[in-house]
Length: 381
Image (cartoon, rainbow, N blue to C red):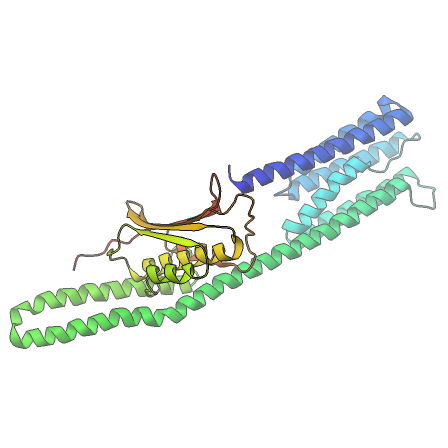
């Protein structure tokens, strides 16, 4: 299970424990004041609402509707039954509704989120009138419920603003990556067209001296033109924001120069390349470079205690694999977005090329960034 999966399980278990504790404390308080029989209805309704709360954290619309229905039914039944028991929703039930309200405000569209929030306030108000219809003041239970509701609204709106800001930042990073690709498109085209021009000039010379070899040059020019069109289609497709296309970029400085430059600023770096003379397309070559550069930069920023870094680049059946691993102590935390969104930009490039990227802690110590890039089949020259 991933770290995110364990975090989700831990948060669900923690919330479930808090809700169960609230139900138990409320039931114990009612039992001590009125007896065990009177505690049963409130405990059952609170348990139903809290169960819906746990089920609706990620998709809260229908669980929220059902929980509000249970709460309203509990208020109506208790109010019609009469007696000295308060008809207001109990603290445990209100806590469950508060969590659902915050989840709804965070994830649902504005209309349904506002409806859930208003319905929660209506249930609390109905409990006040059902419990003390002739009273001129607000009961303590209603005041507590209102405080929970207001806190849930504030938390939900705050989380919604954080999510909106994160989505805007993500889109900004994606747009910046595409703008950079657009700037690099000129270099890619120039790379291919220059080769075509050189081959065409050579064909003209050969045509005057040895005409029977012209067909060979024409075949090479055809392959070069096909490669140019393929690269242009891939980068133009990405700039059109299509999810199934891939970018291309020109070849940057060699990895050896990058590693030497990094070694002067940080820990020792060992570069292993098992296919130094591989003829990869420019977009694959530059993406490998970008992954290594961003991973080494993250080591400088977030792992100052790392003593060594290993960079491995190899080609296998699945394509080109590049991995950057350091030996920083396990206690070193790696904030996901501190200092920039370079990891997001890396993932954007790798996934649009049809590859995959994984970044996370190593089993013993340190951090690893591993990307796999498929290499398109190229026609023989």
